[in-house]
Amino acid sequence: MSENTDLQTENGELARVNPPVDIFENDEGYIIRADVPGVAQDAIDIQFERGQLSIEARRPHDATGTRLGAEFGPVTFQRSFRIPERIDADHISAKLAHGVLELQLPKAAEIRPHKITIQA
Image 1 (cartoon, rainbow, N blue to C red):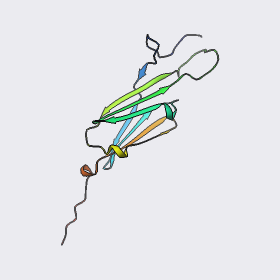
Image 2: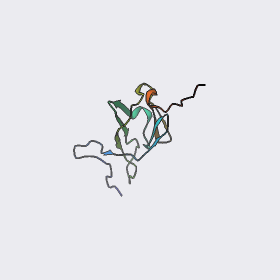
Image 3: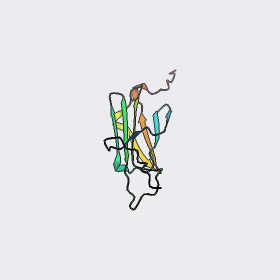
Image 4: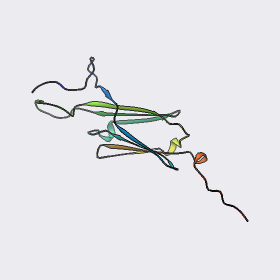
């Protein structure tokens, strides 16, 4: 049972894997949830530039001892998204809990729906 099942490329780098995501939209903005199990907060890099959102999360191999098998090895999770509407980039927020990265991307105020009141 000593087969090497690390997801590595030929040059020894960790393989890049697309994490599964859920994307939601509401009047306020977008919510993106990405599954990144085993990733620490300081191993995540999130960038937003010119409508392109990029997420990279590294999960290292941190176990000690002789490996007998592995189904949960080191990997780099990577996803990129083109965001179709204007986003208030200064107010993008992210949190990580229980292996799920959640991003809140608020829409810019000028494109949010506004209620128009009728004046008498």
